[in-house]
Length: 131
Ligand SMILES: [Zn+2]
View 1: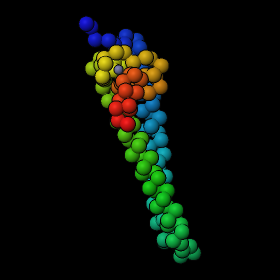
View 2: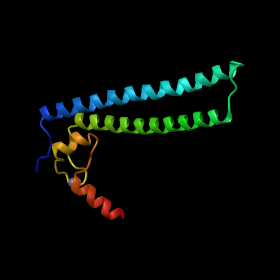
View 3: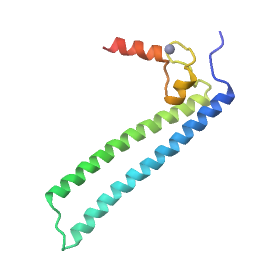
């Protein structure tokens, strides 16, 4: 039996969607990075400026913000990596086929979850097994 796969045309469409998503994430990550740097710079200038004193409360907020940013950054990096793998699957001609049952994952789902590797059925079964 021939392996189920999407046509080249469809793959091209997926590839474009993935690449767009990746550039979105890149932009977001740059934004987070800027915010992190600004927080750091802000602290430095505050410390140098004798008019202001760094209150404990401010420092606390900063570290909370920073932690949140790092967390977000990790998540975005993770997602980015998964999208990279999805691109590799397109190149390897494996994109869109369920890893478990080998069936083609419906196009709407693939567009929604670009890095999906399992069909909804198998994903559901997996959840049942876990719980
Ligand atoms: Zn499946």
